[in-house]
Image (cartoon, rainbow, N blue to C red; front, side, top):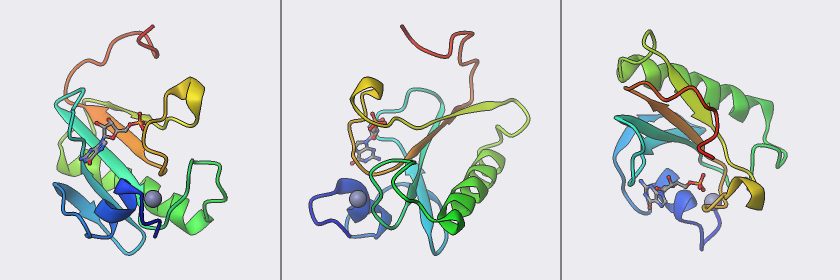
Length: 115
Ligand code: 5GP
Ligand code: ZN
């Protein structure tokens, strides 16, 4: 765990959050500034900076399973959803701990990008 990392703290319950799913490798909790009716962050418990920071296959599989569990429990598996991960400055990654945004619960627009 990285001591100065907010998502390390939330994923390991040093700071509590609004969790919607958890297993040994990952957890999922509600974004504090939601962009859609469902806006959940899927976060590994170990610290990785981005999706391409040597994340083990087992952890990637756990993240995929977490998406599956979250979209079902949120009731958006049929209506649809979007999964986004920001990596680095051009993507405006703010929190430097790998996280997947799972968004849904309304029509998310035709454009992949806001601008
Ligand atoms: P990024 O731009 O890094 O992909 O997005 C970071 C996301 O984390 C933002 O949507 C922001 O609202 C969310 N976030 C940042 N700090 C916290 C926090 O302490 N708790 C929760 N629940 N969400 C956070
Ligand atoms: Zn971290």
